[in-house]
Length: 126
Image (cartoon, rainbow, N blue to C red; front, top):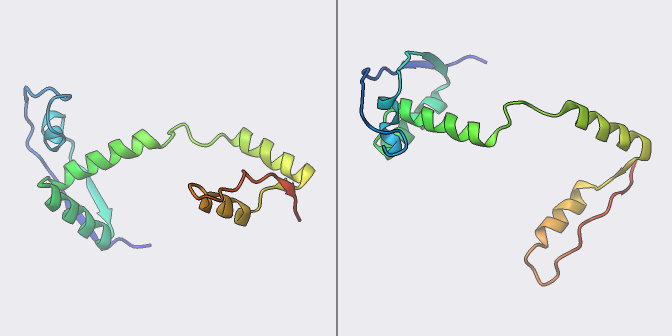
């Protein structure tokens, strides 16, 4: 997969007195040590970053900093628990018990309705 464009963002170095927890997020890049990076991204991503920055009145670097902070808050950096995945796969291979996806979809679709369905139970499949 090729990349269609590059951009370089450089903000001035500053020794700001803003407190990080008090400054609006749009000033966050001005409060940190700036490191110049060159990123190769596709044209659609570049257009979306620029659009988001424009909508917020921010630099692209600030949008990227917010995106990384958000990703960091919701993604487990330690990675998946492979041992747990293996244990569950081994249990399935032994019992062949599982909940079919359509049963789960029907259950979730019923949430909040007058006819809410009970949680589906695993059954032997395959």
